[in-house]
Every structure is written in C-alpha cells, then in structure tokens.
Length: 149
Length: 149
Image 1 (cartoon, chains in turn brown, cyan):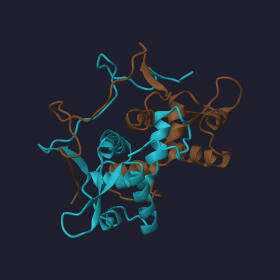
Image 2 (image 1 turned 90 degrees about the vertical axis):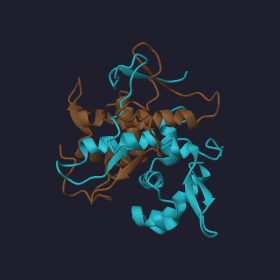
Image 3 (image 1 turned 60 degrees about the vertical axis):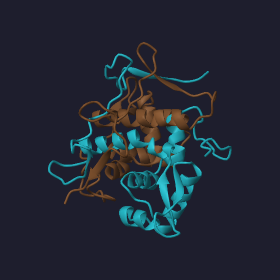
Image 4 (image 1 turned 180 degrees about the horizontal axis):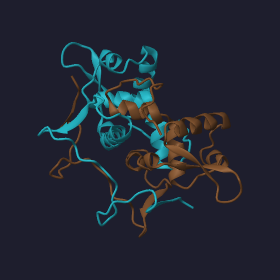
C-alpha cells in the first residue's frame, strides 16, 4: 500500500485534514467505508446499502483500493472477489464514530428513528471528545494549529 | 437554525453518518470548516487558505450557513459581514480532530512537514479513540450498528 504515492496532488500538502479529504473526502467514499465497517463486502452489498450508481461505485472502490483503504480478497465461497477494509481502513473507525455522534446530536429531530452503534453488551458507544495530556476536554478555542515553517 | 429542514433529501434517513455526509460531506465544506476553526472569517480568508474557486466557495458558504454550521456576523471593523462557526459548527471539532489524526498516521511519509494541533501548553492533542462504557477501546469488530425496525 502506498498512501503517499507521487501521483496524488494534495490540496494543502502540510495539512493532515486536507490529506485525508483528498483520499476519502467525498460522500460516497465515506458511505462505502461506513458500509464496509457494517459488513458490506460485495459490489452488490454496496449498491444495495448506499443506492450509489454503479459507475460511481466502481470508481470509488477502485480509488479506495488504490489508496490502501480497501483490499480485494477472495470470497469465502466461490471464486468471486469481495472488498475488505485494510488495517488503514479500519483505522478510520474514530472518524466514522465522530461523524455518527455529531449526526445524532444535530441532524435528527426528536423521535426520528435512527441506527445506534453499540458495544458487545448492547450499550451505546461513549461520546468521543478530544482531550489534552491531562485528560481535560479541549475545543476550538483552547487549541491551535501550528503550521510548519 | 433548522438542520432537519424538510427540503433536505437524505441519502439514508436513519443513519447519522449518512446525514452528516449529506450536510457537510464534501471536501470543500470540510476544508471550510477546518479553516473557520483555524481563524478564517472573511470570503478572502477562505479563498486564500483553501484555494477553492470563488463560485464553489460562494455555494458552500451558503449551504453551510443554511444548515446552521456557519453564521454571518458583522466584522469587528467596517460594515462587512464575515462567517463564524455556530455552536453546531464548533461541535464538529471531534470530527476534524479524528480526520487530522488519521491523516497524521497514514497520509504522510516519514519526515514530511505537517501542521500540528496543540493545546495551550503547546503539547499535541491526545489521540482520540472510541471506548465502551467501561473505558475500554472498541473497534469495528467489537461494535455493531443496530438499525431501527
């Protein structure tokens, strides 16, 4: 896998946020990652879950595979190939969870039905929030981006 | 603000991840949010930082304002209006931090210069990771999405 291939043109080369957005920063790529985390594996799985057009899905699966976020693996039955998250792709879990939790807080009216992320005991996953080295919550005001010289 | 306006067509109405992606799930919107967190306020600030085309920026600023993520406020000097994150927009902080940290881990070669997010003491913000109710780390394998009936 080579996430830093020379043929990627970075929008803002020194910014890690901009780099992840260049790699997976579009709605369909992130929905595909979400579905892969939720068990989707075959082309048909992804079509059915996202409702994405087949040509867009083909292109996004190719890009996600090229960037080392998905990999093609043999299906457990038959000779088909399916898609699985790589370790790098699985490492997007905090990103997807943070997005989910913001969505839960702000994108639903009271009482609207929504899916829930639960742990093995069936309890909701705790809210994640950045903290400093002492464990105190930090936010936009108490942090600063230091740019390289 | 009305994030759940009737005129939004949700890609996957019961999924909080899909809803946030319908609201801010494109590269430019998230770069604009990033820049607003880093102090950008005026149209010119956003043009200079992202390099985004002016027509795209105009459209994204309008959408982010409509969705209640940015608001127009008077500039401290003059009669100009500038853009500020609302509370809902500031609440995207964990999403941007999670993206940044993935970018740091996977999208840079060793030694490539990159920006750093620091707290008031100058220390890097700690890595965020979802945990269960006991504080143990969870991941794709130890969690499950429960869909509404």
